[in-house]
Each structure stands twice: as C-alpha cells, then as structure tokens.
Image (cartoon, rainbow, N blue to C red; front, side):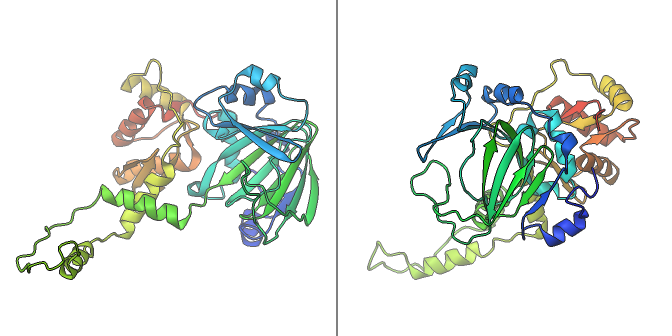
Length: 377
C-alpha cells in the first residue's frame, strides 16, 4: 500500500476530513495502477455469463441500457461516440484488479463492495446521478471531465432506465488524467463525460440500508430460533364473533414472541456471513487436479497461498468468515486465518498448525484460495 497518495493527506487525515463528508481530487495518485485493465479485457469479460455487464447509450436526450452477456460483434457494431461499457465485479475475476484493492486497505474490507470498470467511447457517460455509497473514481487510460455538486435536490427523471437527476447544477469541474483519483461521498451528485476513449475504475464501498440489514437479519435468525412452548388456551370462551381474533390470543402470542432474543455475538455472526456472502453470479474455480493434502502442504510451504479474487474473508475474534460460511477454530489456527484475511495472502515459509492446514486445504479444494503468493506485490 502506498502512503499519502490521497492528495498528500495521511489515511487518518483523509478519513477525518473527507470520508462521508466532502469530495477530494488527488492528482497523479495511482499512475502505476491506472493501466491494469484494458479495453480488450473488458470486452472479454462482457461475454461471460458469470460477470455482470451493461452498455449505456444516449441519443437525443434519451438513455438506453442493455444488459450482457454480449457477443463481440455487439460491441463492434456500436457507434463511434456516446456509449459506455460497464463491467461489475472486475476485482472478483481478475487478479490484477483485485491487487488494486490493497491501496484502499486502510478502509475495513467489511465496507468494500467491488470494482466496476468502464470503457467509454468519446462523449460516453451515464448521465448526472448520485450514488448511495462512498466511491473512489480512478482514471485509467484517456481523459474524463467530471462535474460535481453537493446539491440537495436529488429528484430523478421519471421512467428513465438509469437514475438520472432531473436538475443537475454543477459546482466544481475537473479534467482528470491517468492516475488521478476522485473520492465522492454518498449522495454527491456527479457526471463524468469521456473526452476521447477512456477507462475508469469505480471502487465502491457498500452501505446497506437499515431495511436491508433488518430483513436479512430476520432471515438469519430464522435458522437460529429455538423457542420453547406451544400456544394453548384451556380457558377458551364461547365465540360470539367467530371471525374476530380473540384479544387473549393476541396477548398470549405477543408473550410468546417476546421470548425472541439475540446477542451481540449473533449480530457479529450475521454480519460476517452476510458481508462475505458471494454475489449471485460468482463461480469459484475448483482446481482441475487437486493436490493431495501432503502435496498442498509442501507447495504452500514453498510458494505461499493467496485468496482467490472473488473470495471474501473477514474475522472477529476467533470467528472466521469465508464466502458466507462461519468457522471458529482454536486460537492458533484463528491467528493464521486472520493474518490471511488481512493480507489476502500468506507468504512462504508458512508456520501453520494442523487445524489451520486442514481448513486451508478444504478452502483450496473449494476454489477459495490458490497456491502461490502474489509475486507482483
């Protein structure tokens, strides 16, 4: 991870002054990381059915969106100007894109969503809009003009296939070049237009709504519930209005449901599983010829291991979360797993106990980790 790449600010200063507060443009912040994905890479990914992709075009003030997968000739037939190809979750399928996330490791992985990469033809963009989450916009090849506003009017064009602002009033305007990094807090209105063909990396950080968290937590509790007792009414009276819910039944049912309880530990287990759950289209590539446990131990000891790009791994105390699953190994193995979660790799020589080796081997067989540490770090 580079230090002070945020316009000369330390990571702590950036979080204090800008995170969820105001935009920041950092010139020449990540020039060496701006060319890791090419147009051909994106065209190849857009043809896959395990990768989410879209093509956005505009004509005469009207917007059109098509969803992939696409054929190569679909993209070849696009006009010379005014369109954008967007590919979601590029970090989950390309090692070089996953490596870019290390630059942002001062922000908890629990907040990370993914990297979306866009290729825009001259004049391409997705219109003035706002996001509900924090985002870093890294300029790759080419140039783009960004206009930004902290306006409160966030009304959208009704019926549009994209969330286009009805009334966009830009306050700042910047021309960005390869390596420039723009941070935007949630609900900050912005519009980017390609000046010539260009590539932009959008590093997004998830911010689930209270409604989403509540709904998913109730789903989680459904599998954890153990409430004793059964409804009974030995003192039932003759019903004068048989269709009416008896007040005593409502009271007794409320008392039964009042036994619902959860602890901070339940919330942590829910968050770990929820935040590491792979997206629907993610497919993990199992090794074609899996090494035996002994071979795995030998090769991992010599070359190290690394998480597959799509693997999400978090921890809290001794509890380890990997791709929606929860594990609670003993303290020594938990320390090794937490180290892997933080660094997303373990370099040789490895010092692992038997429990850690067994867990890692199972994850290797599932395609969650790969042999060999990242030599390009």
